[in-house]
Length: 301
Length: 187
Image (cartoon, rainbow over all chains, first blue to last red; front, side):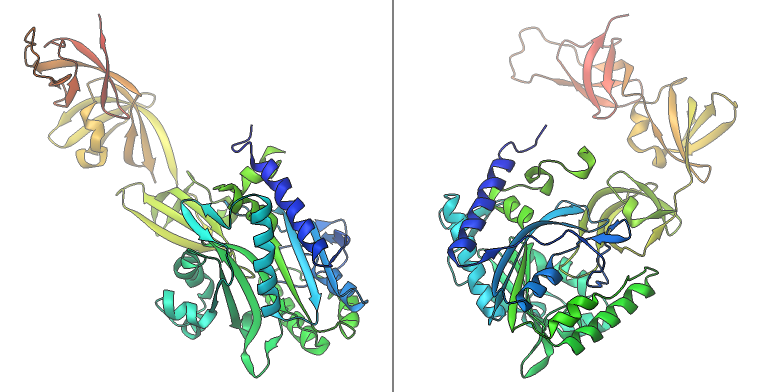
């Protein structure tokens, strides 16, 4: 019994529109393996083992290897697996859209994301806006762009530096800032502290921040993107530090993705974006829970 | 011991030595950040509620809660005396801990007493109880003042809104969860 009978119909329409957008923009659809022998170590993502290998937590490394092999514009729709993530907006198996574009940076991808959602909204006949849980969100570009430092000044009782020093950046972000992002129009939160840069390059001329960004609509985090880090030495340093963080939690970080690190030397300057398809459908379907936009939740299996 | 993956609405945990029930729960995880578990907690003794956010590494003790079926014997001032129907052990629960339950307790009624570390902290009543009306204003036939109900007092001193035809001495079925009149009981 489905709570929202329209959820799967909306889902199919969103996916159709996403494919149409990327095909129209000259992207190649790719399909990389779900089972991998090594993953990018992430301190706050717990992968699901599959035999001696792992189910992917994201297709990022394989897609970057394709960039390095000379495919400059690629996109993929695939399932990703992350243990113990379950909530109103989380499933341990979810659907990701990732796309990568050579010779681009995070600002190019912000603009492309604006166009993507415009095309999806148009295909769904939603008239240039969406209404989520009573909030009307206009999709006409340009959307709000807010640096992390500005967001803390505007919405939080502490500065980003203080939150990082106290170790409660995530709590402050969730409690004070996220609910106020993407109100009235979508918000790109960008220029993350370098320590939270993940696989993003540092901003040229300002190494204190990384060119990482997140997209929010109605307080819902929809997508994460980077101007990609292409320096293999720096990437290895970050991976090793992340492995150490994982060990300190008592987990086994697994082997480093050495083949990715080898091929990173050949990767062009690029930007990439990961967008949660289930959440995109939730927003357009005005669904309060992710359960309403998937065929089955784990509990139903 | 519970971990954060056990957290959900309705779970009872021990925190700073008190039993709490989770009345609202939301999992969140900012991009690339750590998992956060936001709980609305209600203290099962004081009733106080507040929000608390936990991290994956947090652990929780199971509260030592048990339930025993007991018979209500009598009240003496603010002391309500109960007897365990199996062990015949007698205990006292103070009026303030019983809260609204005192509106529906009559002698010999069987209730489930909730104990925390063997200390009684509350009772669960039957969903429906039958109580005798001890005071009711007479129904004036043809009264068209417009009111569909009138207040009557039952044997516990509780005042409940009932249809105008209810009279003194009649027995009423009352829903203890809502405190509302359900029907008249013929004996």
